[in-house]
Image (tube, rainbow, N blue to C red; front, side):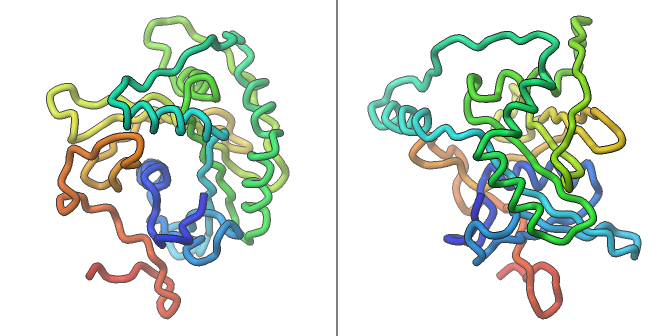
Length: 241
């Protein structure tokens, strides 16, 4: 994804940044502000004085047609629905992931990561629809509390990629739907295999949703997304104005 126009993280990017910060214990800054599509979305340096660096690219399977359908539905005051069937592919999630990582849109984002010098290169995937990845991402990050454990084989990551993340199911607090949400994540790390996490995301820390897709129920002046601009003079975030 690109931050050229606004030099700010999009909503989907900010969700990924907040999730990664909780798991990795880092502060992520925008890496591609003003660079168009030439650089990854985020960059960080691990604390501790070792100067170990990481970069992340946040992307999803193409869903322009679905987003257009939902925008037209919102404008017409109709429900936003997704129809069709999804092949189950039980115990084949690793194959699904491998096929996805080989697609052109994924390779373009992987190449963007490989163009940057870093100790770790992370690809963070989310899905805008159940059919195009969402259903499988949910299963990858499931805790299997119901006992129906699904076997997932290890991935063979593209050379130079250290981690691939899959954003799974989000669940809002029913009593405070505009407050805190929990988000499930699946991560495949080279040398360590599969890991699963549950993080919390505060709605007030996110940019507003796409106005063509959903109305924002929170006044704009109450949102406080993190300032992630890098100050070239000091290599860190600019002060809030």
